[in-house]
Length: 244
Image (cartoon, rainbow, N blue to C red; front, side, top):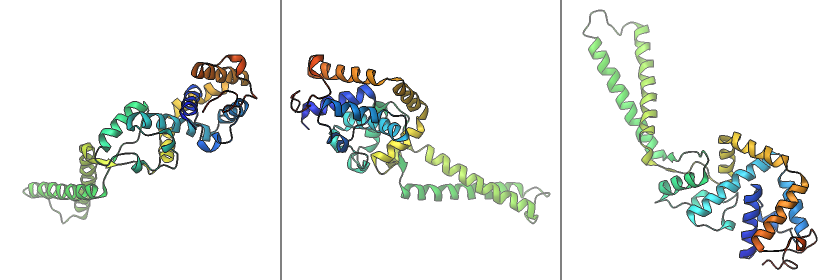
């Protein structure tokens, strides 16, 4: 597809909040083909909602990272799009541009390991210090199994709390992408923003076939400056309408 057709597809996706894959677009030759494709994509099903999420993600990625539309597919690995050195800045800009709740970047395995070691050391030191303080009182003894069990469990709980806290207060160390591919990210984003996408799906269902056709024609006329009488179902997109 040439620049005109790519821009036209982008406008159509924006108008109807759908994702039109390159595989499906290869079978589109006439305005009628495109209209029928839109009708099938506007059906209220999970794939349609995932497509809407993917469309939002792809639009934000192309705006922030400067990548081309074709380079962002559901199977595209996120590692191929984001720079390892700039990943935190890029992810923040991407989240802002996308306007949706996104999963956070993750800590590296090595950083988690050191945080586990540090939290274990701190919890052990804290528990031992507390035992030493209490051991000064004659009523306190660890010989009691119940007392020993309470301190053991308290130490484990403190370990978990410290570990979770250390991860929360070190967002600047997050540098691992939350999913492998763009398609996986779309499914996660859909689950995190289900209410918003459900509302949009319901809006799409309310459109009649005639309304879809009229909005499609309006996009052609606005984007390519055609007359409405020229945009008919049998018109060839690459022939009669001269789109490259």
